[in-house]
Amino acid sequence: MVVTTELADELPAEAVEAVKARAAVLLLAFRHGNQLAFDRELDRLLAEHAEREVATLLVWIAAEAVRKAYAHEVGDRVLRALVRRAPEDTSAVAVDEDSVDAALLLESVATGDVGTVRALVAGTPDTTYLLGGLLQAVAMMLPLLPEGEAEEIAAELRRRHCGRTAPQVPEARHA
Image (cartoon, rainbow, N blue to C red; front, side, top):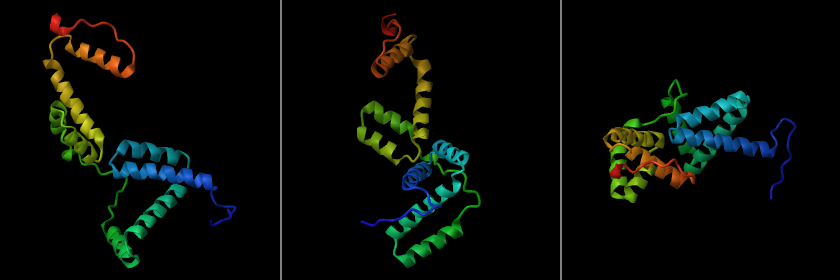
């Protein structure tokens, strides 16, 4: 076991762990293209003036990742290549809306193809686009339902997921 002493200007060990966790939230949001989560966490950090600590931890995490993935001389080449390709504006999180296939998700749910649904969700960096596409599909189908059917479905969903009973809605099929 290695025992270290805390210097006067160092963060306490508990604070370091907390900042590491927050840095991980930033990295996960960036990695998965979740701009909202990334911006929300970044705003919180900026409000707390924790920029330096988080930047230090992000650099530490990146250095550890490079150290574990590459031999020393290869790691330096990879980093130099990244520097050459670095965009001027790095504030946006890259998302790929075009790769999201909500139609395939809808068809897979309808046929009960669990494997395809899981693969789509796992393979979509930002699932908000996938769910947004599914929501758009449902909205497009709502006008095609017989009158009262949408209310009946909503009541059933409330019963199943909220544990409460919704106001009685007459069944559309018997109206």
